[in-house]
Image (cartoon, rainbow, N blue to C red; front, top):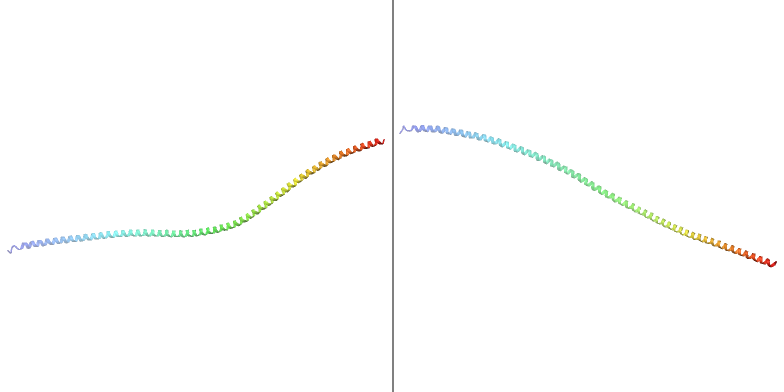
Length: 195
C-alpha cells in the first residue's frame, strides 16, 4: 500500500503547478482588467473633463452673450429714459408755449375788442355825420327847390304884371286917342257954331 502514495503527490504537484498557473493567469487577467479599468477611467475622466470644459466654455459664452444683451438692454433703457426725459421736457415746453400763446391770444382778443369797439364807435360817428350832412343836403336841396319854385312863381307874376301893364297901357293909349278924337270933334263943332 506504500508504493501507491507517490503518484497522487505527483499529481498534487502537477495540480499545484496548474493552480499556480491558473492563479497567475487570473492575476494577469485581473492586472489587465485593472489596467483596462485604469485606461477606461482616465479616458472617461478626460472625456468628462473635455465635456466639462466644453460645457463651461459654452456657459461662459452664453453668460458673456447674456451680459452683452443685458448691457445692450441697459443702454437701450438708458436711451429710452433720456428720450422720455427729453420728451417730457419738450412736452413741458410745448404746454408752456401753448399757455403763453393762449395769454397772447387773449391779450390780442382784448386789444382787438377795444380796437373794434373804437372802430365801431368811429364808424357810428362817421355814419351819423354822413346822415346829418345828407339830411342837411336834402334840406338845402328842398329849400333851393322851394326858392326856385317861388322865383318861378314870382317870375310868372312879374310877366303877368308886365303883360297886364302893357294891356293897361294899350287901353290907356286907345282911351287917350278916343279922348283926343272926341276933343277934336268938340273943338270942331264949337268952331262951327261960333262961325
